[in-house]
Length: 111
Image (cartoon, rainbow, N blue to C red):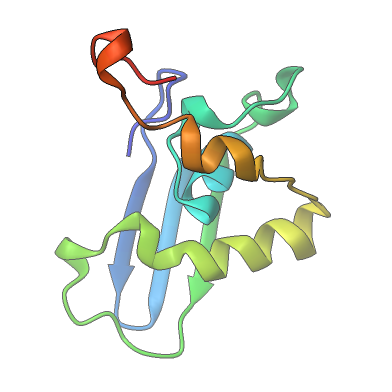
């Protein structure tokens, strides 16, 4: 999973353990909300400056770790952001429906 800041997040799964290495808060927020890291807005270095390694135990063993998609971790990452980082996130619901859609008037560019 690319981070947009030059570093790649690495996700490993073995049995009931999932490890996320070299991740920033921006990348974790992107996983938690199903968006790309560049879509997470915020100012200052606090979203990108520190890289984290996270180890989590999951209730059910990962049957195909090589096929684990980062979005499968959304619920777990969302809880982590809330409990460990006391992070409040506000979604722009208007932009969720309109901003990602292309229209013929703008030659296929997203609004």
